[in-house]
Length: 458
Image (cartoon, rainbow, N blue to C red; front, top):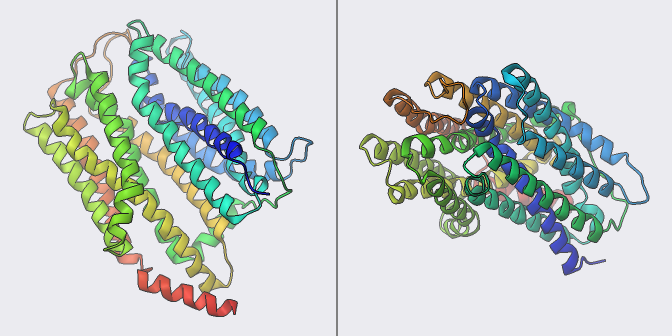
């Protein structure tokens, strides 16, 4: 039975709320607990790394639990609803930290953030896994995946555009209160959107949900050298992206500065998010008509590195306060990241065909599960490096009040500029050198693999 428009819209609404929550946590937890609460950024980064690595390891186990669930409401929706309600409460608690002193706050943050990761996984895994159970046609399956990913991007964009300004407007002059109110609003929207999804989208079939253990993931990966190359490339590329996303807010607050830094940050994030989507949906298809995928990959890496270098140059010549000039290289970085996200997915898909020819076994779901696993682990390591770097350059409070105005030194500002630009460039250079040396799935090889698989199928 074909899915109705109503069901497709409800599924997309669920993705919007789900990724609003994820974006708030992923982009602003470091800032909230370091700048607003006043915890040591290395400690915050360490907890974020531990929690995300644990979350990555936890994904396969959650998949097994969902696969074994049998209720009159289906397999997926009970987990989706329960995980949503629990995660909404934990999200609010994450951004409504009590006054319990430094030692108490360290314990509080550690426990609450790990709980946030566990409860988010409870609803995220069943959300994406239920697609085959709510539609029986290949076209609807593909369309639903596209709707989900697109609407997830909308949710992330909403938080990128609205969080900092929302905190300023709703906090009454207090960032701490502002984050509490924003988290309350987002938590409420989250529950409403997922309830709409649960009530509207019905499971139509008892789908076979294939889950992969960590052992199966690594076995499939190490038996397919091209999948391994792509996954490691994804780790490096995402690491540069996570470094940027965790540091850019400090650039706008302390380097660009000014009374309107929140508006500048919001505008930059809005422009960047728009061009990231344009990179995926328009720029990549246009370039694909004229270039092979490896050439586009190389061009995207050079675009991102050029963007970082231009930002650094503008800062060094005293133009860091010019928002329009900063947005121009920012567009290069965001558009490049949009294309890279498409390319790495394409490359990973091509590596599945390669692996089937090499081993005789098609490990599509296992390899894509591995992608999620390593990206989460990479994001944890990146945020730890960002936290450690902030401490090393001296961007830490030397006052007892987290609300007090902090004035970084000239050396600290220079360190922030280098950390925000040179570190991502180093990571991208490593990705370029590694990928160009090891990756061999050119357009010609991919076409040949496809023909050989077709012949085998006959």
